[in-house]
Length: 209
Image (cartoon, rainbow, N blue to C red; front, side):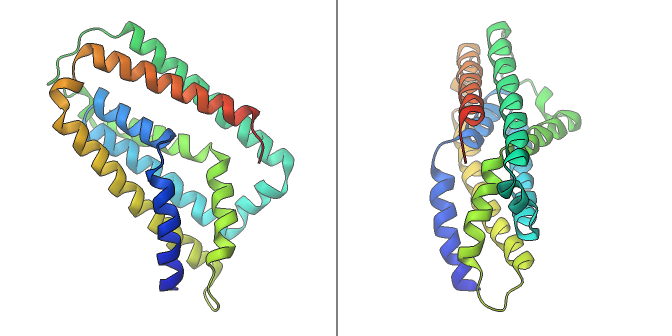
């Protein structure tokens, strides 16, 4: 089991380092709302990863990959959500007024919970995460280990690697906070992240398994 976990950690670690939707969301949160909001987003993404890992192990994601209709419905729902969120960010970036870099509105409990919910929703509505676990799980199932236990263990490993990566991103953003807090940079970050989300949404909507 230890060998299987280490082998999976290498594969998942490489995928974690590839810039993608999750990285864009956390970086945008760190720039626009601050450290706590960014960690809320990261934890939400990690929560979604845990759900997908457990679901894959329990066979729920297998049903999604076996049923074309189930996969298509989830894919369209996820694509719609990403496009909507991306367009909202682009709009907010265009409308953004000058913001005081010391403003801590993003630290309120309600906004942090909202960040967690946004990260969770983005991850859960991406069926490719579930497909990833369905594809990977059989390759890392040692003899004598229950699939549910192994699925949870793999998801935890993936989650830990993701949180370490997000922590590095948030820390760098904190070090460059003075520059990143400039209104022009924040507006640009919103616009770029919005375009990335719309792009991911369109790709998800038109893509195949």
